[in-house]
Length: 134
Image (cartoon, rainbow, N blue to C red; front, side, top):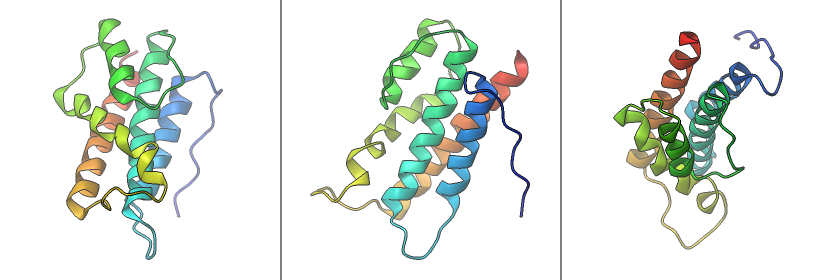
């Protein structure tokens, strides 16, 4: 069992990246009986918290939204270069709300789940690297 990460203040970008990593670990944890939609929600949350950590580092105020395209636009407007792989995070926004509840939408496929994981991993890795640059 791995040790718990050290805690930081809530307004410290490092705490947000730690929480993003926690969501990513949960997203990768395939437990029998858990819907892929729920794992994709954790992947979305990992990306969202990672992006918000960058916004905090840049001292950019952001709205309390789950729209990753909107958050990435704020990062871009602040002059921070965003890799193409991280720009894909906007695709995860749909997992923030709609897929968390029973609905008429098709269930998440294994391919969609794997893609969500890849995007979340890239986003968290990028945020981690950005914080190390400070």
